Amino acid sequence: MPTPSATAARSAGSAGSAEAAEEAHDRGRTWSIAQVADEFGVTHRTVRHYEDLGLISPERRGTTRVYHRRDRTRLGLILRGRRLGFPLDEIRTIIDLYDAPRGRRSQLEYVLDQIDARRADLEQRRRDLDAALSELTEFEQRCRSDLDSLA
Image 1 (cartoon, helix red, strand yellow):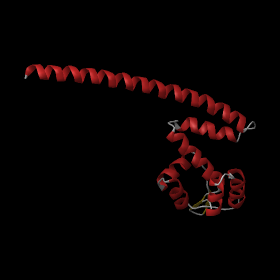
Image 2 (cartoon, rainbow, N blue to C red):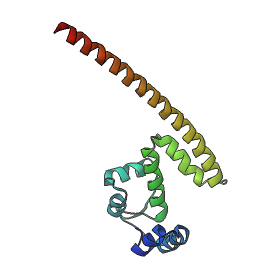
Image 3 (cartoon, rainbow, N blue to C red):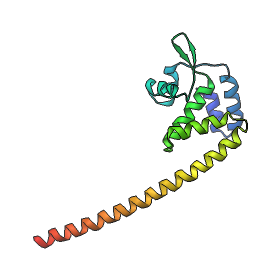
Image 4 (tube, helix red, strand yellow):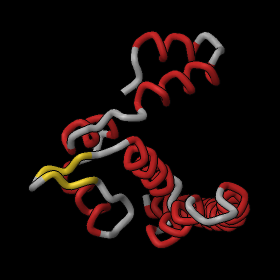
């Protein structure tokens, strides 16, 4: 979790140096499932589900899950992908590409392709919704007109 000074520095416009300081601070730090779930606003069950799918892989100390910075980063990416409407298999591909030899470049190229596809899908849904609303409005007007003529 960001420290107040790191958060203030980031909002003051020195995001790069604040993030670097936070990264250095968090490098050896660990979090419990409760801390991770609370931080991201999800349930323990959700965190365990992503673990079961192999999207995150916390260290195990006996029966206790120990989350490292990498797990938190991956969980953040998973949740962002879900908010944007990506299916979990695409999210897995994006996250796994990060670890690939080409690393960030291949990940970014893939993500940009997925963004284009997602945008096209959402724009088509918007057109479909606009058409449906227009049709509904016309139907409503006909019904009101028919009702008025019966009075």
